Amino acid sequence: MKLFRIINITFVLGSTSVILVLISLFTPLFSQAVVYIFALLPLPKMPSAAMSSPPTAYVVLGGGLTNDNNNQIILNRYSLNRVRTAAGAYHDLPLPIVLSGAEAPWLGQWLIEHGIDGLISENASMNTCENARFTAKRIPLHHVYLITDSYHMARARRQFALNGINSTPLSAPLPVRRDWMKPAQNLSHSRRAVYEIAAYLRDVIRPQMNCRHADDVTSQQLLTPRGSAKKASDE
Figure 1: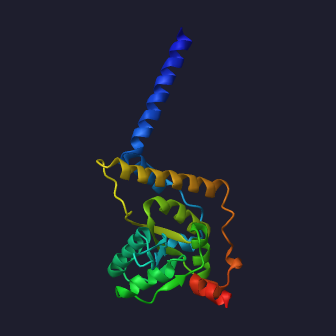
Figure 2 (figure 1 turned 90 degrees about the horizontal axis):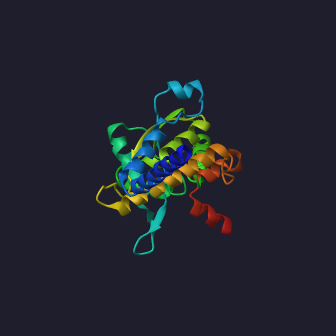
Figure 3 (figure 1 turned 30 degrees about the horizontal axis):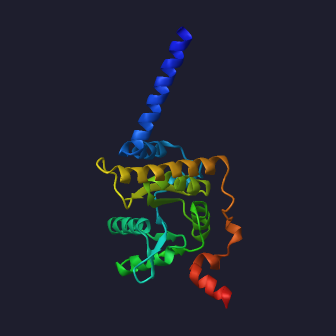
């Protein structure tokens, strides 16, 4: 009888927990909790210079590209929010801006059109791990303001720390807001949070195989936009 009661209580508690988790996926609770926990995660050990130096640059991680109505390549909403965040921070505190990823030419064009130049581009990286490795190769940095979205931030900061670069997070807003009255929007945040949890655990347990080492790319590749590099190779 006692064993039956224990099993029954365990089942009820387990079922209730599952129901609460499922409900939270459709509210801001789950995604906000993930961001909060991510912010508490420790970074890998870094050189003393990285720990003692103030930020000396902004590093903007590309968030993707899309096509407009004329089929022209443009920044998607993730990238656009990140570059806008960089511009706002730059106007408050002018520092060099490093643009990392295949999106770098479009990020740079947007900044130039908004009166910000003297940019540093790293064009070769195709994922977060390469963002960090190739940025470290492109320019010597100890501490940066890192600009990406709040879900991606913990994973990005960890990769930069592994490459000897400390970071102060500057989170860019996401294209879709959390809203208690819009379950579909909250679910999209929850999906993004689940993806980043899985990606973070993957990076810790079994680092991704498609992350090239700094020695695998030349300095010229870092400087050359990917479209230009492809065209040159085709010729």
